[in-house]
Every structure is written in C-alpha cells, then in structure tokens.
Image (cartoon, rainbow, N blue to C red):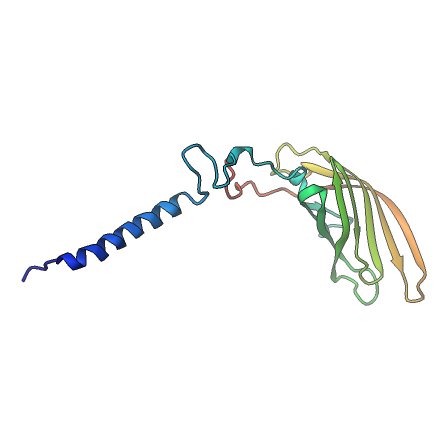
Length: 184
C-alpha cells in the first residue's frame, strides 16, 4: 500500500526542513557575517585590532636545559606567565618548580616581570624582546629576551641575597599550524 502524506503532516515536515536548513546555514557562517564582511556588531572583521605584542607570547629557554619561561602578552601590555625550573635546595633538588608571575608588563619591546617566591627563590627580569637569529617563527631564537635577570633567595633564617645575571633567552620554535580564524 502506498504511503500518503496528508495535509496535516506536510506542515510539520516543512517546518522541520526549514529549521534544518537554517541550522546548516548558521553553522556554515559561525562569525555571523553579513554580505558586507561585517560581523553582528557592524565592525569589519579584517579591521579587528590584534593585541600589541601578542607575537612575543610563547616559550623561551631559561638558565639550564629543560627549564623555560612561558610568556603571554594580554590586553594593555599586561603579561602573564611563569618560570619553570629545577629546584636547587636539598628538599627540592631536581624537582620542577613553577614560579608564576606576580607582575608582568610589556611596553613596546620593553619587558619586565617579577615572580612569586617558591621555596625561598624568586626572579625579576628587566630587558627587551628582540628579533633573534631564527629565520621564521618555526625556528629557535626567532625572538630573544635580552636583559638582566635577578635571582632573589632567602633561607630559613630570613637572610636574603640577590645575584644578577645578564641573559639572552631564546624563544622555542613555534607551531606553524594556523590558529583558528587565521589565514596562512
């Protein structure tokens, strides 16, 4: 016996098909752009400003092999990150210790940061971010942190000492896969 679609079943079927088409269209244009290339706020997508200095975000070597500094440049020159290093004292020798940034600032290419104290040690950096020897972002040392690193230490008796080190910390190679929404 043939299947007949009665009039009362056509309306829900049509609504379902219309909904499915609208959903497919919405998924095909997730940025909600109109024909003029503008987003829902009326701003041109290509004119959206990038965070100044964001290209410097990434990992840089630290004092010893296996140690590193992670830097993330955010809005208005605010910098977050951490230093990950091997412990030196009897209680933490060889263990990885993470010193998160207490303060971090980037003004053009001038970088400063101060870390939290972990097991009696904290760090301060004052210097610049410069182009290094790397030819592309996929190469080591595309950027280099050059400046003075101050290591502050305090012992159980609250005696503090500081040592300053001139450093050139090379960036690690960056993944060359395009970020979401970025064209190669």
